[in-house]
Image 1 (cartoon, helix red, strand yellow):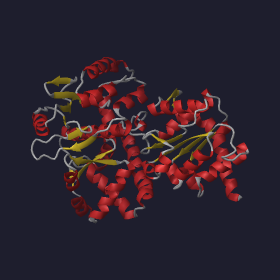
Image 2 (image 1 turned 45 degrees about the vertical axis):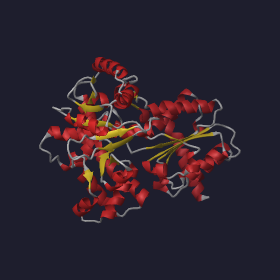
Image 3 (image 1 turned 45 degrees about the horizontal axis):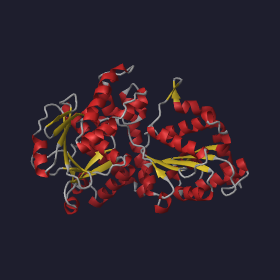
Length: 482
């Protein structure tokens, strides 16, 4: 009974205080934060739920810390409270991280207590709409089972579970049939401008997809012209904005911070939190492995993107190759890193080393800034960030769009391009990323080797999309809207 009272006190405190403090969570200087596209999608499901449609009432939002998952939750909470006039005790926000700091808990026990004392009900007897926002739900190892039980026992509950990317690993096929998963990723330039300035870039993303995968440039050129003519009408926008985005703008925490070192400090804290909390949860790794994880990330941040030999890294860190393999695997599961395999047969890919990229160039830059950039050529360093940005945008596209393609690196020893993408059984598309004086020899060579219809150069050499013969040139700033 004592534990139940403690849970009830926690619930009562949240129900009382969240509505009072909600404005501090969703606005700054009396101006509301802009909405991510995921907000509008979930808002639509909420509206349907309130009208009696109860299929899409179990939402999962995994993603790195700091990308804005909790802000989406608070915005939806405010929408229910202010726009839909839902009563306070029909909306329950739970921070499982806060719960975990106070006592051991199970999400299902908390929900049972909430229904018992606030609605004189159980899951099966509930007769009114309830909204559950379960934040940082990875702190309960059985969150997926709780979600399944709640979903099955009552069609009167709309619930959202957020948390680290570990959530992707913690539900089975049975749960997957019930939930809708939307990965919340670091920001591309389109999302950055929308959230920071409420700038609408229209259908540029769809146009770029047509350009890259079909070679159709007409819509992309129109969208690009419209953007180029309207960007400078944004109050506060200037020529430095894109460079700031590249180095710092992958996370919304950069919007209101003028001191770049403070941004770097916050991003470094995100990385450390993932290593200490999320990696331990996913792989139950030792303290030594946590230290090696930080060293490994620092090592990767200072290297040019390339094939990574696990044996070489193991020797560098004075540990075993199996430990490095395990750490890399867990780092990918946290979504701090992702990998790219060599283009070719499955047999070839299994023999070749992988290339690793950071979830966003902002994380790489934060690590490099803390370590001290040892590269003497600023343009060479910027090119590394650009290659990471291109890899990030393609990687996120595979998670966000209903488009089936794979991204590889070109392991040809001479005149290799940076990436090769391939959609199902279509011809591969070679892609070169560069800065400064970038010629088309590498792309031409790759087009010939892979018998491709066309190739793509993504660089700052051109200020507008161009299609000349079988080569498409895309400005890096335009590509970053993908």
